[in-house]
Length: 298
Image 1 (cartoon, helix red, strand yellow):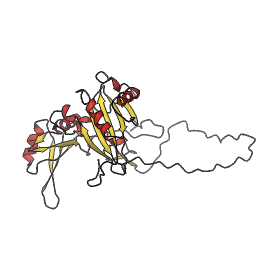
Image 2: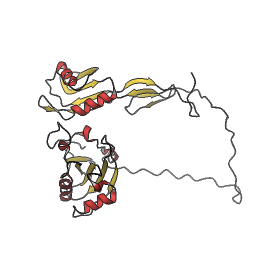
Image 3: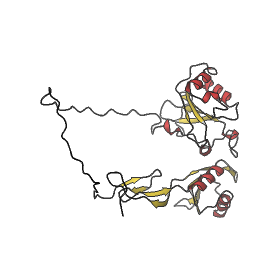
Image 4: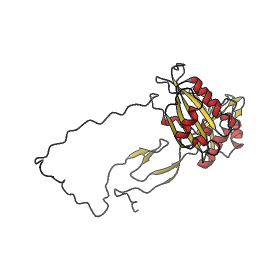
């Protein structure tokens, strides 16, 4: 969340996130209930509050967010909401400069097996801080579009309608050079000749022991799935193992399951960090589009 050596302690605020069901946490029914609950715990008034359906894989759960100015209030709120084993609670410290967010406390270890006490699992908790982060660490103002003066009418006393343009009755096919865009994984797609359909089936593994061999990696992966291909990443100059690896699976669902099961476990005295990879597998192709929005004929 922040670059090493750039953090300044004690000069920021705090961001609270609580995930749970309204059945076990009635204060998550809406922002008024959540804010009333915070007022009973905090000495200062809570800041900005938001309550939305959870964007993680925890179905039927609600996410509640709040900005807190005082560290003691943040600690008190965390301890209070952690008393229930049905709520997932995180607290980040926010810098006043460009430092971003630094995780202070979370109770991931109480909810996910294999996560050490005090540890954090990015993959399993499903919390997305992207909505609060900008490249500079804080929201950037959006410049207003420049004002363009409109030409005055020759006869301001009378309304002059715009000229009428007759639309063609049939779709118009336009021949143009190939136009490329990118999908959600960054893969180039020729949107003129039909979009390439892709699917993420790769996982990315970090924090592996430097003594891991290809056979040991294959045995680790085979305990939770059936990899199609796996690879240990090595330095291009020295050939030394860098402690990271990738693996591909037959389906997106299998890759997601393996990533969730391996993330946070101990292997050869190291805690693994596993997420979905950025490379995508081509699984098909869509028909090209014409200008009226319908599919073309072949």
